[in-house]
Length: 141
Image 1 (cartoon, rainbow, N blue to C red):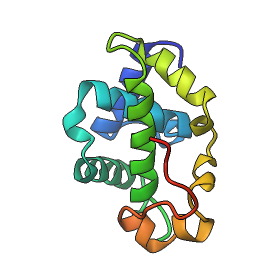
Image 2: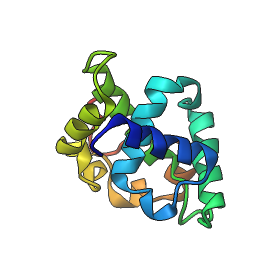
Image 3: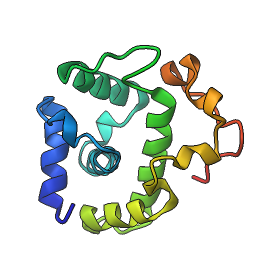
Image 4: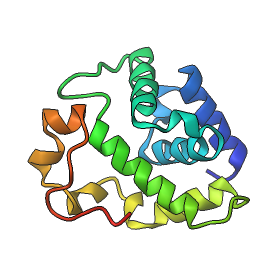
């Protein structure tokens, strides 16, 4: 994402539930998280982010079940990563630059959580529904 307007369009599309599902990628999740953390921190609380993403999923035909859709532990871990990366830059840092650096970090790899959770723990029903602490190593932020 080459500019902050693209990130804003993506985040507001998430909020309005109009973002095309094909655009809801790993990078887009982090882009939206950064935008929300900076512009709508009221929506980044655990209950609010669950409501936001679950509603978006439903609007785009993705069922929130024990096997798919919203995943609470992944979402909260990703929000922690985004918050950490955003805090490591000044409040005026362009979001697209923060996103570029985040995507170049270990968290930029879609499988980054495998260093912290065993697969069976991370993809359990409990981890999908609630926060489950990492069972391999604590998150670094």
